[in-house]
Image (cartoon, rainbow, N blue to C red; front, side, top):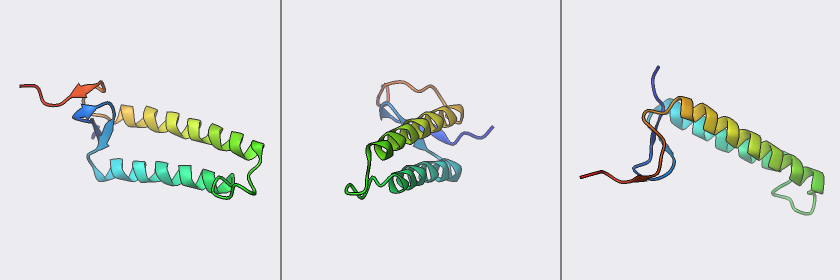
Length: 86
């Protein structure tokens, strides 16, 4: 199975290394923005408490799904990195 992400060289996180990884990342960001737009996040005068709660639930669900999916397509172990070892 082709890997789409690698661990960052400094800190904790993942970096896309293929066009599929970049595509998944852009889709994730787009879904976050669409959810914000649908829940009036960018129009505070229209946003209700339910809209905010719905956005938070969408945000959490999307982040968990993205992390789960990206970890399955990651080459190497995800941990805190301090850079290249000498």
